[in-house]
Length: 166
Image (cartoon, rainbow, N blue to C red; front, side, top):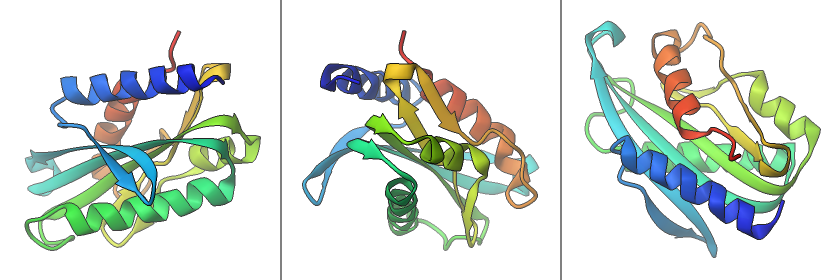
């Protein structure tokens, strides 16, 4: 995947986040530029909770399981710290899309992203691994027991934000 295709993909994600009211911006995470977008949605069917959805996307030379796992942990910590409002679990939830677009994506990393939702006490992450060269996006699209109420919402947002280019 060329640097240009990575930039094009991240620009497309930024545009989709803007169109969905996520107010994306670029931040510097220890010298790495990351695209951060967020939105909050309230639904009575979610037991009258407010769900804060964070999308954090970055380009990396290589995506492996340890890289996407570490990034997922960092994104969940960032989301918990920056959501504001009531504490997590008190009529409020946090979900995140940690997104890595890589110059080379290891098949195990793609499988890891598609395997399951990653949960941490009222916080849910659906890691996304993007291989633009292969026009493939790997992410979990299931409905797990924990966080099931939000599953359809997260699947819809993921499909909207992370379509392959081309």
